[in-house]
Picture 1 (cartoon, rainbow, N blue to C red):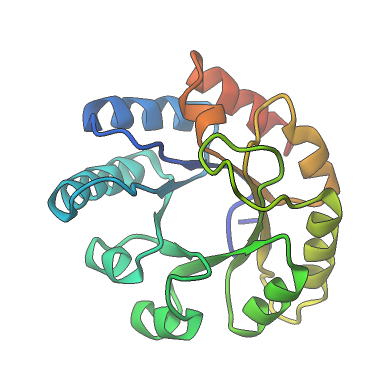
Picture 2 (cartoon, rainbow, N blue to C red):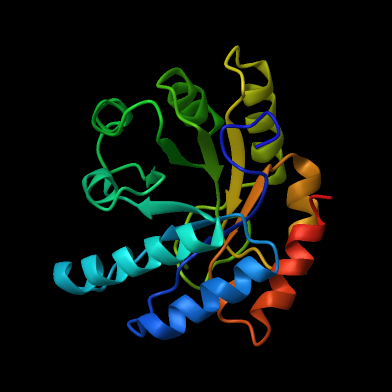
Length: 215
């Protein structure tokens, strides 16, 4: 991970698709374009549907060598032996997740537009801090707006961390291959895309363009 606790590059986040075969094909296309990590995020599935899909997605990620994260639910992440979990403000404590998952799993957390939240999360031993939405988001139209300055401040926080390898800075929200450049330039180690990647007509091509920003 080049001195980071979370891989540098393109971080895909799954859309609300019930068609698992379509999703698996899309994940494979994104991985072929350079996607290094994937977060399974599904808000509308029943528990049974979600469990069936997340298991298949996890297996596909393992086959592809893509880091596999679960959104919101560290218990589910533990159940399916994911590589880690992404926690939002209301998804339980980082400490509980770390205790349950162990030191070998990755924990990332949403810090919205608040570097102060990132500072607290870093003290709780997270592997990445995520800021966003960077741009207007079709997935979360009411999301707070983060700025490039938030990314810059987050990068300063992780750089000053005594932990090595250091935690990463992730940017999310409305990011596309066309607008990602300034976010990476501001200091994001990873860019998380949902619609900008998976709703594209050329998933592999978008993944390649995003991945090239990190070379």
